[in-house]
Length: 401
Image (cartoon, rainbow, N blue to C red; front, side, top):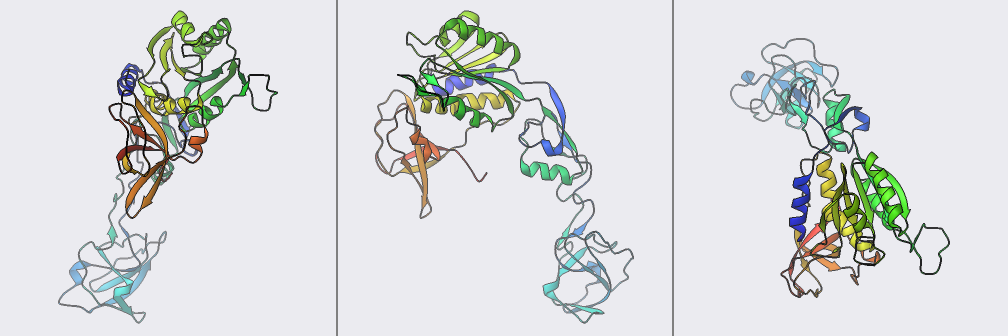
């Protein structure tokens, strides 16, 4: 099954979480909004100055500059001017300070001269100049964050500015994570002949930590179908998603696929994708199952392209599209048509152009290809070899955050 077809099949079959909880604002970062949270106050809650200068009444300006105004007071942030000004009078005002009653524009201090009692306005000013009206950012009762949004650091600040202390969010997804294989040992343990240290769970844990969920780490399961079955049935009773790596290929010791077919339903097995061909998706009772390949690179690529969008959708996130843009190859890529492929790349910006290099030998066992990579290079299944200078799609790992 092609990648897009498989991803669409999975996303359209998901039932989003419906349970919510109210959490304190300082705990709300990276959580998913369950229902719109509305501003308790307008922001700003009063007309205020956008600059340091002098607040005036626009109708007092007649003729041409300079205009002479009488200085009768000042308005500071948190300490507004309390009186009313008469015709021809102005108020010294500072950024963020409340605009005095009856005044409707601010002349910036650079365009004024004063002797302490009178102010000369040296340039014309328009009605409403340098004034932030009440609700310029948001009006009381308007939604600050909408359903399905992941709350960012910026949202937390905005919610605080609107007087909000608690937010209704989707409860965290519960994910059971384990690896399979007699060849695997925990880092630090003694390696027996033929064994390697297990890394996929550690990588997946870090990737999962970017999503609002809870992880139940079940460790390493041996190549024993009875123990795999027991572990999966137990995990399916307490978790929303089961996520494994290894055991879903066609080898004699790859038991995970057979166990799923025995105790649940297997809906997808094998993708038209490189790396990551042996990927399984199915269900055990009410829990979803994702079986990732055992090779480390294949595990990462299939998680990013298939599993992460599904977990975000399950968590109620409205937008879970993969970000992408184009870049120019600085070295050739050999590719045989037939399977969509994702290679690890490193981006570079030169003379207003974006270039990308491949990070060495792209074998699916080589975690080294990720060490200096900052993107995936997408090669469509219809493409043949790509020459230097070819335009390719890239999926960046990080943005400014």
